[in-house]
Image (cartoon, rainbow, N blue to C red; front, side, top):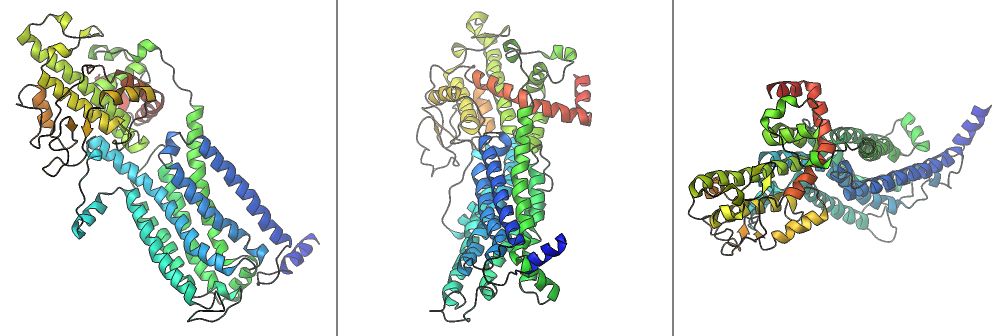
Length: 547
């Protein structure tokens, strides 16, 4: 009896362009729209609260929220299509289909393209940390513009395609809207006047269909192919794969049910709007885009930070003590790896966690210190300087101070330190800057305030080519090493760029605070994951046996 009443309540109303459908099915659609909107609002609030988490930050919070919100506008209108029964203006739906849905799909793919951007950026960072800071000037010729486009990262290329796609969709949509009598009776030069039901069919909707097809069936599979090798610990690759696959069937089903002549499909259209076939993909896209980064942030919050003492934070171990390192997850183990074999950790962080900038910074500061010590060893036999005047005592070893190296070598060391600052620390010039305390950054920023960073290739056309205190990420590494060993006549490059003035405060310990901060960050986040992954693969055991 109950089923009969429900059947009559449902079949009494249809999606036929008449009065509003406020039967049981219509009320059900309204309740789903309200409850689901509240759920999405709560999820967006949680994302905003955890927006500083690494897994959410790298995804791009603003792009993520923009795509979810735009898709949600269309989703709600689809859910309300049956209750409104076509009373929602056809013109409004036309523009939503022509602008909101394609733009939402485009922003969604842009958020997915950030995965490819980060993957390529991390690979580049692990290969050469100065490469990402290099830029080339644009020559306003067809060839120059094409080269500039090819140098863009995956996300920037996607934004360019979004602009092109919106233009391709918006211009013909505007022409078709003002030219068709389907949307207005008083003017137009083709088509015929249509009611609310037949208004939603016709060639005028084709541009929006093409853009949806492009983003879901062309760009989506292309992105799936490009990220086929990505396997990160933040579920970002799986989020992208699931969302792209979920978006594939929506447009074909909408086309099939919109232009069908099959009686069964026409009956379904009376109770379930043709645009409703976008609902499964829209809901899947929204939920995997929100839940997976939230889950990763939740796991990070549950994982207690591994506390360590101040002495362990500043300890330095020698190679002879490697045999006593039984706890591979300890700070001493991490320090041993930083000092002797950090490259596998850099590779793993670049490919799995997207935090290679931290490990690269630790490596470059280590190399910076070692080169300074090498200068001391190179000069000491010649100068016979007493050990007490060589500089600071750290861990029982004497490190070179300002008085032990020549002005030329100080300039070269300052050049190297400047490159580390501008390519790995400064958020305005580094492609992927490390995350350090503001007071530490301000101290370094004041120290390098007299230096001009020129990211463009150092040649005759460079506006900084005749200025002093300019560093450039295009400099040859061999030139730097030659200057450190005293074999170069000048630390300047052939372009005339170089360091002339070095602050008196500059010494070997300028990166110590940042180094300890990043080392602790690696110890509490990256290192446990790396140890667990290496233990699972059996690689860690072999390394420590060899040590």
